[in-house]
Length: 236
Image (tube, rainbow, N blue to C red; front, side, top):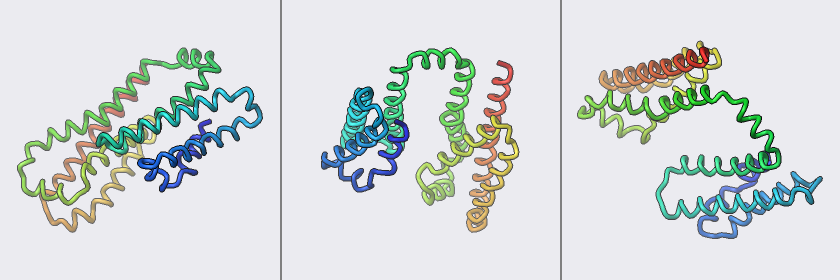
């Protein structure tokens, strides 16, 4: 079912359908029809026993995509956030089918999960993705009035620095949990190489200092959260 979803959403859905289905409903039906065909192929050996699964998943896909199109047309929402929510709902419908037919798997899964560790990981992700960017923003607030600060920000992609920081801290978290601490050094070296050209061409001491402080602060806080999480997980 999951393979059928991946094929239908990412392989067999032309970009033109994605654009046209916002104003022409038949392209939405084409897309849902592809999913229906893939599910039929998936369950081809036992269609009589799985027709309920096919109907549920097709109806759920149609409903989710219809809601997504409606939301896009009425409100201005970050497309990445909307895409993530859309995919979570699709995957949730597939998971719901699996656990509906195998309820024991759900109870076994819940029993085996260490919820204390799950809570710690969630806290770490919240710190890395949401809290640390706010801390960095507050830290740099005393330089907000600097003309050079605003000039450099105007020359970059909107919120690119924030996104890069989140990605690098997530990578640091992954490296630490996997025991690949040397990956942090590789990441820092790679970022330094990519930034070297900007800093050389800028010939701006303030910009160089801004980049260095931001990088060290992001890496430092990311490592603090990562090693703190690893320690807490080890004592549970």
